[in-house]
Length: 154
Length: 154
Length: 154
Length: 154
Image (tube, rainbow over all chains, first blue to last red; front, side, top):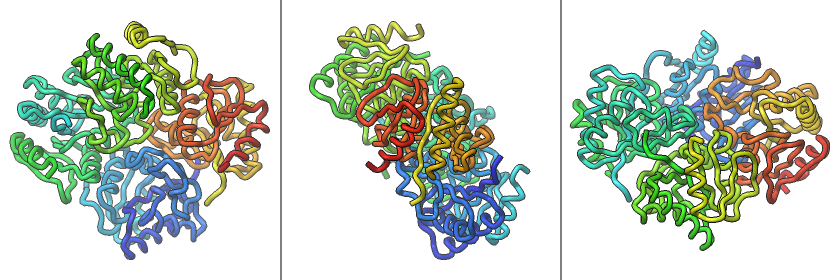
């Protein structure tokens, strides 16, 4: 088996504060040798991928469209699914754990699918109002990454 | 354009109380001439479809698998999507409004997708802990149906 | 179990000759009491749905987009899948048999998926160059419908 | 933009001859610095991924199921789509060109989708009977890789 893959999810547009958090999550995941999986577009997806790449990590983008060209520039390997929002399932199914940085309805669908599939979820920042067993909250990027990695396979 | 289509979502296994509520929702939708769309399997899906059929309504089942044979017996027209949980997107995209009767993570993903697509959502019974703009709560099946229909196109 | 469902597939734009063939296929399916499933858009999809409706049949449209409004006016019940071309799998999985009227690459993907799932396929008109076990050719709409229905469950 | 990605498609079980061809295709793609994308399972998918890895290449597996554990051992990065055969669209959409090594109906659906999306296709070995503009035939693995790479962006 390969490295741990962690899915980082969040909105396609991000406030400076969420972008900073997402970048830090990406960096910390890379420093631990985790592969970052995300939706491949802008906002939190781009900020987290950038953080990972700047720390020498590997990034996978699971895109909604039919072409790799829509991937942000920090994506190493892009999978163009062609299935629109249904690719949210693929993003979280591809993570051993999921970290949500802020986010709205799309992110909520990813959190719900992650839990449906039994993946642990960590919420960071002000995101969707969704709760239940297996959903954890973190106050800092470091805490989120620590928690996510510790929950893999737990 | 055809009749109003309302998606009824909820767990594949249902307590007697949720089954009763789902059946009543189905019946009331049929009495109003709405077409019921659901996931086509058991539990809340089956109870709501049964309620609709017993009141002379029309039922559409949007199945996760590759064959119509998995549809419950109250489904008039089954679409076998073959895409697993990703069919949750198709269920709610096909409703002009969505009523969730109880439910767990799968239902939460449907509520989130419904809101992503701008569909009004009404929650009935004890279901997923998800909230936000456009999510309404009803105390009775009658209230849920009334609310859902009134919100279509609103 | 409900009526036989037959999927009619073909291009989104149709020559007058293919539109005529598709309309006749739709009409003959309706006269036999079969429900017509198609991709819900224009061209062969629309012509076949129109033929079915004019003969009093029932039509299901399995759309690629996220909204029912893109369905052609002859669709009774539309399922908006939101998964783009991947909905081609759902179209043919929902048919007990598949009739292709002309068509190009999208149609070829539907023929291939139909055979992958074991559905019998009948080709009518000048369509994709795809062949193999379980693919039959018909010269007329009547022959295509006769063949498709006879092959269901065979 | 990142390296060229080439999708290699074919059956989940492979004869020794097709496995040899697939392995050689994988090796030659890796030697050219191309990233190999495949369906991540056995047969041609596994043989091509093994060939790429043994030559130091990078391999992406786009799986039909909901978990990375089903990926063969030569996959570096696995995306679990959860959408069954509909993931065939994602496999070819993620390639800048597509090489089919043998194959049956699943492969035919990938060839058709590839052409629908405008991707060049090269067929190698005895595979599906599908033909049309943009589908090329090669006699050897070297010829297939040469042709595929030359057609990217052409």
